[in-house]
Image (cartoon, rainbow, N blue to C red):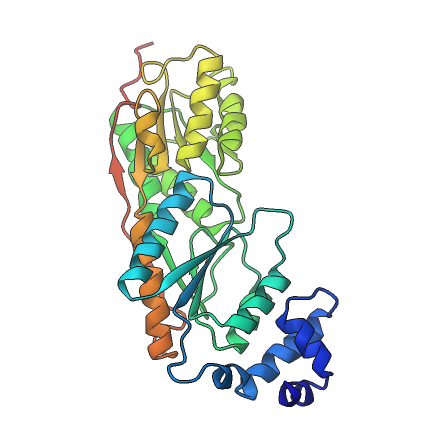
Length: 331
Protein backbone atom coordinates (compact mmCIF):
# COMPACT_ATOMS: atom_id res chain seq x y z
CA UNK A 1 0.00 0.00 0.00
CA UNK A 2 2.95 2.32 0.64
CA UNK A 3 4.17 1.71 -2.91
CA UNK A 4 0.70 2.47 -4.30
CA UNK A 5 0.45 5.64 -2.20
CA UNK A 6 3.87 6.83 -3.39
CA UNK A 7 3.02 6.10 -7.03
CA UNK A 8 -0.31 7.94 -6.79
CA UNK A 9 1.05 10.83 -4.73
CA UNK A 10 -1.41 10.24 -1.88
CA UNK A 11 -1.27 8.98 1.69
CA UNK A 12 -1.58 5.34 2.75
CA UNK A 13 -4.91 6.11 4.54
CA UNK A 14 -6.24 7.47 1.24
CA UNK A 15 -5.36 4.19 -0.50
CA UNK A 16 -7.15 2.38 2.31
CA UNK A 17 -10.25 4.53 1.81
CA UNK A 18 -10.31 3.69 -1.91
CA UNK A 19 -9.97 -0.03 -1.18
CA UNK A 20 -12.82 0.08 1.31
CA UNK A 21 -15.20 2.01 -0.93
CA UNK A 22 -15.26 5.17 1.17
CA UNK A 23 -17.04 8.10 -0.47
CA UNK A 24 -14.85 10.89 0.92
CA UNK A 25 -12.27 10.59 -1.89
CA UNK A 26 -12.44 12.66 -5.08
CA UNK A 27 -12.93 10.89 -8.40
CA UNK A 28 -9.59 12.13 -9.73
CA UNK A 29 -7.74 10.82 -6.65
CA UNK A 30 -9.58 7.50 -6.87
CA UNK A 31 -8.59 7.16 -10.52
CA UNK A 32 -4.91 7.83 -9.66
CA UNK A 33 -5.01 5.15 -6.97
CA UNK A 34 -6.55 2.62 -9.37
CA UNK A 35 -3.85 3.39 -11.93
CA UNK A 36 -1.10 3.11 -9.32
CA UNK A 37 -2.46 -0.24 -8.11
CA UNK A 38 -2.24 -1.52 -11.65
CA UNK A 39 1.23 -0.16 -12.45
CA UNK A 40 2.77 -1.37 -9.18
CA UNK A 41 1.31 -4.86 -9.49
CA UNK A 42 -0.44 -4.49 -6.14
CA UNK A 43 -3.35 -6.79 -6.97
CA UNK A 44 -1.16 -9.49 -8.47
CA UNK A 45 0.99 -9.69 -5.35
CA UNK A 46 -2.08 -10.05 -3.17
CA UNK A 47 -3.20 -13.11 -5.13
CA UNK A 48 -0.45 -15.75 -5.10
CA UNK A 49 -0.42 -18.46 -7.72
CA UNK A 50 -3.08 -18.35 -10.40
CA UNK A 51 -4.17 -14.76 -10.85
CA UNK A 52 -7.93 -15.36 -10.84
CA UNK A 53 -10.66 -14.94 -8.28
CA UNK A 54 -13.16 -17.45 -9.66
CA UNK A 55 -15.74 -14.66 -9.76
CA UNK A 56 -17.43 -12.94 -12.70
CA UNK A 57 -19.43 -9.82 -11.90
CA UNK A 58 -22.75 -9.08 -13.57
CA UNK A 59 -23.88 -5.49 -13.08
CA UNK A 60 -27.51 -5.10 -14.16
CA UNK A 61 -30.15 -2.38 -14.07
CA UNK A 62 -32.65 -4.58 -12.23
CA UNK A 63 -33.27 -8.21 -11.38
CA UNK A 64 -37.04 -8.31 -11.02
CA UNK A 65 -38.04 -8.82 -14.66
CA UNK A 66 -38.26 -12.00 -16.78
CA UNK A 67 -35.72 -10.41 -19.17
CA UNK A 68 -33.16 -9.96 -16.40
CA UNK A 69 -33.76 -13.43 -14.98
CA UNK A 70 -32.99 -15.01 -18.35
CA UNK A 71 -29.74 -13.05 -18.56
CA UNK A 72 -28.71 -14.10 -15.05
CA UNK A 73 -29.59 -17.74 -15.68
CA UNK A 74 -27.41 -17.82 -18.77
CA UNK A 75 -24.49 -16.09 -17.04
CA UNK A 76 -24.61 -18.30 -13.96
CA UNK A 77 -24.81 -21.54 -15.92
CA UNK A 78 -21.95 -20.52 -18.24
CA UNK A 79 -19.75 -19.41 -15.34
CA UNK A 80 -20.46 -22.62 -13.43
CA UNK A 81 -19.44 -24.77 -16.39
CA UNK A 82 -16.03 -23.08 -16.25
CA UNK A 83 -15.64 -23.53 -12.50
CA UNK A 84 -16.49 -19.92 -11.67
CA UNK A 85 -19.38 -18.17 -9.98
CA UNK A 86 -21.45 -15.14 -10.98
CA UNK A 87 -21.73 -12.23 -8.55
CA UNK A 88 -24.82 -10.12 -9.27
CA UNK A 89 -25.07 -6.42 -8.49
CA UNK A 90 -28.27 -4.49 -9.16
CA UNK A 91 -27.96 -0.77 -9.75
CA UNK A 92 -31.67 -0.15 -9.21
CA UNK A 93 -31.67 0.83 -5.57
CA UNK A 94 -30.96 4.06 -3.75
CA UNK A 95 -27.89 2.79 -1.90
CA UNK A 96 -25.98 1.73 -5.02
CA UNK A 97 -22.81 3.70 -5.74
CA UNK A 98 -20.70 2.91 -8.78
CA UNK A 99 -17.72 4.54 -7.09
CA UNK A 100 -18.03 2.31 -4.02
CA UNK A 101 -18.60 -0.74 -6.22
CA UNK A 102 -15.42 -0.02 -8.19
CA UNK A 103 -13.48 0.20 -4.93
CA UNK A 104 -14.80 -3.20 -3.85
CA UNK A 105 -13.75 -4.69 -7.18
CA UNK A 106 -10.27 -3.23 -6.69
CA UNK A 107 -10.10 -4.78 -3.24
CA UNK A 108 -11.32 -8.31 -3.98
CA UNK A 109 -10.55 -8.64 -7.70
CA UNK A 110 -12.90 -9.87 -10.40
CA UNK A 111 -12.09 -12.08 -13.36
CA UNK A 112 -14.35 -9.93 -15.51
CA UNK A 113 -17.39 -7.69 -15.55
CA UNK A 114 -20.52 -8.00 -17.68
CA UNK A 115 -22.42 -4.71 -17.80
CA UNK A 116 -26.14 -5.10 -18.55
CA UNK A 117 -27.00 -1.44 -18.34
CA UNK A 118 -29.18 0.91 -20.35
CA UNK A 119 -26.46 3.53 -19.92
CA UNK A 120 -22.78 2.76 -19.33
CA UNK A 121 -20.37 5.52 -18.31
CA UNK A 122 -17.14 5.16 -20.27
CA UNK A 123 -15.11 6.59 -17.39
CA UNK A 124 -16.28 3.71 -15.22
CA UNK A 125 -15.17 1.20 -17.82
CA UNK A 126 -11.80 2.95 -18.06
CA UNK A 127 -11.38 2.53 -14.28
CA UNK A 128 -11.87 -1.22 -14.70
CA UNK A 129 -9.38 -1.23 -17.56
CA UNK A 130 -6.78 0.30 -15.25
CA UNK A 131 -7.27 -2.77 -13.05
CA UNK A 132 -6.80 -5.08 -16.07
CA UNK A 133 -10.36 -6.32 -15.62
CA UNK A 134 -12.02 -7.60 -18.82
CA UNK A 135 -15.32 -5.85 -19.61
CA UNK A 136 -18.15 -7.02 -21.87
CA UNK A 137 -21.24 -4.94 -22.60
CA UNK A 138 -24.53 -6.76 -23.02
CA UNK A 139 -27.48 -5.03 -24.73
CA UNK A 140 -29.24 -2.80 -24.03
CA UNK A 141 -26.51 -0.21 -23.76
CA UNK A 142 -26.46 3.48 -24.55
CA UNK A 143 -24.79 3.45 -27.94
CA UNK A 144 -21.78 1.50 -29.14
CA UNK A 145 -18.04 1.96 -28.72
CA UNK A 146 -15.67 0.21 -31.16
CA UNK A 147 -13.02 -0.04 -28.44
CA UNK A 148 -15.27 -2.21 -26.24
CA UNK A 149 -16.33 -5.82 -26.55
CA UNK A 150 -20.08 -6.28 -26.72
CA UNK A 151 -22.77 -8.91 -27.23
CA UNK A 152 -26.19 -8.15 -28.64
CA UNK A 153 -28.96 -9.48 -30.81
CA UNK A 154 -30.07 -8.74 -34.35
CA UNK A 155 -32.49 -6.01 -33.28
CA UNK A 156 -33.03 -4.66 -36.80
CA UNK A 157 -33.91 -8.11 -38.10
CA UNK A 158 -36.27 -8.69 -35.19
CA UNK A 159 -38.09 -5.42 -35.79
CA UNK A 160 -38.35 -6.20 -39.49
CA UNK A 161 -39.71 -9.72 -38.88
CA UNK A 162 -42.34 -8.53 -36.38
CA UNK A 163 -43.63 -5.84 -38.73
CA UNK A 164 -43.49 -8.05 -41.81
CA UNK A 165 -45.59 -10.65 -39.96
CA UNK A 166 -48.28 -8.06 -39.22
CA UNK A 167 -48.22 -6.81 -42.81
CA UNK A 168 -48.62 -10.40 -44.08
CA UNK A 169 -51.81 -10.67 -42.04
CA UNK A 170 -53.21 -7.61 -43.83
CA UNK A 171 -52.46 -4.81 -41.37
CA UNK A 172 -51.60 -1.42 -42.84
CA UNK A 173 -51.89 0.80 -39.74
CA UNK A 174 -49.24 -0.63 -37.43
CA UNK A 175 -48.23 1.22 -34.29
CA UNK A 176 -44.71 1.09 -32.92
CA UNK A 177 -43.68 1.48 -29.27
CA UNK A 178 -39.95 1.94 -28.87
CA UNK A 179 -37.71 2.05 -25.85
CA UNK A 180 -35.67 5.14 -24.91
CA UNK A 181 -34.62 6.77 -28.17
CA UNK A 182 -30.98 7.22 -27.14
CA UNK A 183 -30.46 3.45 -26.95
CA UNK A 184 -28.97 1.72 -29.97
CA UNK A 185 -31.21 -1.33 -29.62
CA UNK A 186 -34.30 0.93 -29.65
CA UNK A 187 -33.15 2.69 -32.79
CA UNK A 188 -32.42 -0.59 -34.57
CA UNK A 189 -35.84 -2.07 -33.75
CA UNK A 190 -37.49 1.05 -35.10
CA UNK A 191 -35.36 0.96 -38.27
CA UNK A 192 -36.42 -2.66 -38.83
CA UNK A 193 -40.06 -1.65 -38.39
CA UNK A 194 -39.65 1.26 -40.82
CA UNK A 195 -37.84 -0.88 -43.40
CA UNK A 196 -40.63 -3.47 -43.42
CA UNK A 197 -43.23 -0.73 -43.96
CA UNK A 198 -41.23 0.82 -46.81
CA UNK A 199 -40.79 -2.58 -48.45
CA UNK A 200 -44.58 -2.98 -48.42
CA UNK A 201 -44.94 0.58 -49.81
CA UNK A 202 -46.51 1.79 -46.58
CA UNK A 203 -45.69 5.14 -45.00
CA UNK A 204 -44.07 5.52 -41.58
CA UNK A 205 -46.75 7.66 -39.94
CA UNK A 206 -45.36 9.77 -37.08
CA UNK A 207 -48.63 9.58 -35.13
CA UNK A 208 -48.26 5.79 -34.95
CA UNK A 209 -44.73 5.93 -33.47
CA UNK A 210 -44.15 6.49 -29.77
CA UNK A 211 -41.43 5.74 -27.24
CA UNK A 212 -41.22 4.96 -23.54
CA UNK A 213 -39.46 2.87 -20.94
CA UNK A 214 -39.21 -0.86 -21.63
CA UNK A 215 -41.31 -1.68 -18.55
CA UNK A 216 -45.09 -2.30 -18.34
CA UNK A 217 -46.04 1.30 -17.36
CA UNK A 218 -44.21 2.57 -20.43
CA UNK A 219 -46.18 0.23 -22.67
CA UNK A 220 -49.43 1.13 -20.94
CA UNK A 221 -48.91 4.87 -21.43
CA UNK A 222 -47.87 4.44 -25.07
CA UNK A 223 -50.72 2.01 -25.72
CA UNK A 224 -53.24 4.56 -24.45
CA UNK A 225 -51.87 7.20 -26.80
CA UNK A 226 -52.13 4.90 -29.81
CA UNK A 227 -55.54 3.46 -28.97
CA UNK A 228 -57.02 6.89 -28.34
CA UNK A 229 -56.19 8.10 -31.85
CA UNK A 230 -59.27 8.91 -33.98
CA UNK A 231 -58.01 6.35 -36.49
CA UNK A 232 -56.31 3.91 -34.17
CA UNK A 233 -53.89 1.22 -35.37
CA UNK A 234 -55.11 -2.32 -35.96
CA UNK A 235 -51.77 -3.72 -34.76
CA UNK A 236 -48.98 -2.66 -32.41
CA UNK A 237 -45.37 -3.81 -32.31
CA UNK A 238 -43.94 -3.20 -28.82
CA UNK A 239 -40.17 -3.24 -28.22
CA UNK A 240 -40.42 -5.49 -25.15
CA UNK A 241 -42.78 -8.11 -23.78
CA UNK A 242 -43.38 -5.93 -20.73
CA UNK A 243 -44.40 -3.03 -22.95
CA UNK A 244 -46.75 -5.41 -24.75
CA UNK A 245 -48.28 -6.37 -21.40
CA UNK A 246 -48.97 -2.67 -20.85
CA UNK A 247 -50.68 -2.52 -24.25
CA UNK A 248 -52.89 -5.45 -23.18
CA UNK A 249 -54.01 -3.43 -20.16
CA UNK A 250 -54.69 -0.31 -22.24
CA UNK A 251 -56.75 -2.43 -24.65
CA UNK A 252 -58.71 -4.03 -21.80
CA UNK A 253 -59.55 -0.62 -20.38
CA UNK A 254 -61.00 0.38 -23.76
CA UNK A 255 -62.74 -2.94 -24.40
CA UNK A 256 -60.53 -3.53 -27.43
CA UNK A 257 -60.28 -7.26 -28.03
CA UNK A 258 -56.97 -8.97 -28.83
CA UNK A 259 -56.43 -10.22 -31.54
CA UNK A 260 -59.76 -9.67 -33.30
CA UNK A 261 -59.61 -5.87 -32.96
CA UNK A 262 -55.93 -5.38 -32.18
CA UNK A 263 -52.91 -7.56 -32.93
CA UNK A 264 -49.92 -7.23 -30.62
CA UNK A 265 -46.30 -8.36 -31.01
CA UNK A 266 -43.66 -8.09 -28.28
CA UNK A 267 -39.90 -8.45 -28.17
CA UNK A 268 -37.71 -10.78 -26.01
CA UNK A 269 -39.94 -13.90 -25.86
CA UNK A 270 -39.71 -14.19 -22.08
CA UNK A 271 -41.85 -16.40 -19.85
CA UNK A 272 -44.51 -13.68 -19.60
CA UNK A 273 -45.62 -14.49 -23.17
CA UNK A 274 -47.31 -17.71 -22.08
CA UNK A 275 -49.05 -16.11 -19.11
CA UNK A 276 -50.69 -13.30 -21.05
CA UNK A 277 -54.10 -14.04 -22.52
CA UNK A 278 -54.06 -14.50 -25.43
CA UNK A 279 -50.48 -15.81 -25.52
CA UNK A 280 -48.18 -13.16 -26.92
CA UNK A 281 -46.49 -13.36 -30.31
CA UNK A 282 -42.93 -12.15 -29.72
CA UNK A 283 -39.50 -11.78 -31.26
CA UNK A 284 -37.25 -14.25 -29.47
CA UNK A 285 -34.05 -12.65 -28.24
CA UNK A 286 -31.68 -15.43 -27.05
CA UNK A 287 -30.99 -13.76 -23.72
CA UNK A 288 -29.46 -16.72 -21.89
CA UNK A 289 -27.26 -17.51 -24.89
CA UNK A 290 -26.15 -13.87 -25.07
CA UNK A 291 -25.11 -13.98 -21.43
CA UNK A 292 -23.24 -17.25 -21.98
CA UNK A 293 -21.42 -15.68 -24.92
CA UNK A 294 -20.45 -12.73 -22.72
CA UNK A 295 -18.96 -15.13 -20.16
CA UNK A 296 -17.00 -16.89 -22.91
CA UNK A 297 -15.62 -13.56 -24.08
CA UNK A 298 -14.51 -12.74 -20.52
CA UNK A 299 -12.37 -15.88 -20.52
CA UNK A 300 -11.07 -15.10 -24.02
CA UNK A 301 -10.02 -11.63 -22.89
CA UNK A 302 -8.36 -13.08 -19.79
CA UNK A 303 -6.33 -15.56 -21.84
CA UNK A 304 -5.41 -13.02 -24.52
CA UNK A 305 -6.42 -9.41 -23.77
CA UNK A 306 -5.86 -8.23 -27.35
CA UNK A 307 -7.90 -10.70 -29.39
CA UNK A 308 -11.44 -9.55 -28.60
CA UNK A 309 -11.05 -5.82 -28.03
CA UNK A 310 -13.76 -4.04 -30.01
CA UNK A 311 -15.42 -7.29 -31.03
CA UNK A 312 -19.17 -7.08 -31.58
CA UNK A 313 -21.11 -10.35 -31.58
CA UNK A 314 -24.80 -10.45 -32.49
CA UNK A 315 -26.98 -13.51 -31.97
CA UNK A 316 -29.93 -14.15 -34.24
CA UNK A 317 -33.50 -13.25 -33.31
CA UNK A 318 -36.55 -15.20 -34.49
CA UNK A 319 -40.30 -14.60 -34.49
CA UNK A 320 -42.44 -16.89 -32.31
CA UNK A 321 -46.06 -16.70 -33.45
CA UNK A 322 -48.76 -17.30 -30.83
CA UNK A 323 -52.36 -16.17 -30.39
CA UNK A 324 -52.07 -12.37 -30.14
CA UNK A 325 -51.96 -11.71 -33.89
CA UNK A 326 -54.64 -12.19 -36.53
CA UNK A 327 -55.94 -10.58 -39.70
CA UNK A 328 -57.75 -7.26 -39.13
CA UNK A 329 -61.52 -7.14 -39.19
CA UNK A 330 -62.94 -6.00 -42.54
CA UNK A 331 -64.20 -2.42 -42.59
